[in-house]
Length: 188
Image (cartoon, rainbow, N blue to C red; front, side, top):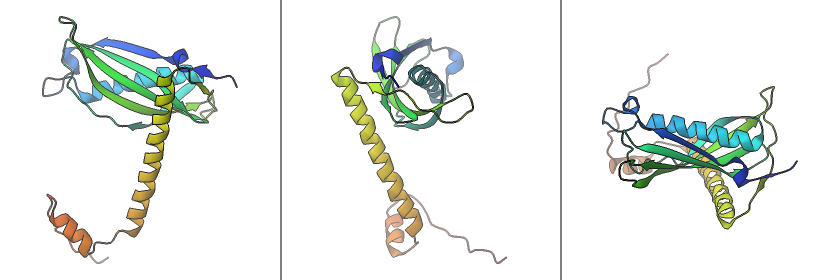
């Protein structure tokens, strides 16, 4: 299977932020931006894979700065990593004030997508051809995030399996902003 360079599926979506996109605080709703990011990830991943792709996870969604109504939002998406059947698409979101030309980075997110064939089964994706140092850095960054996610998942699985409401947990919770008021279990 022939590979594709990162540049093959680069995707840029541009949209004007209108009043219908606002939250109760008067800023563009995070859910609106998430929906736009999901679309950009779909276009980018599907172009690279040559088939339909679905979102399976989203990493590191941090809204660094609010987006205002009237600003133009640009979503820049690129395939950062490919596995056998999955791809990681990095998305950078920029907001531009069209009156001043000032542009600011509002967030970066990473979408893991899985390619699907016409029967809905996961399908093999073409390899990713890395042509620049940035391509290599992004690929390695995706591998690091995967490694950290796998480590965190194993840690939490172990934590759940071995959890006990003991003295150590109680002492830890005493320093937190919570009140433990356990209700006695009802007899069946």
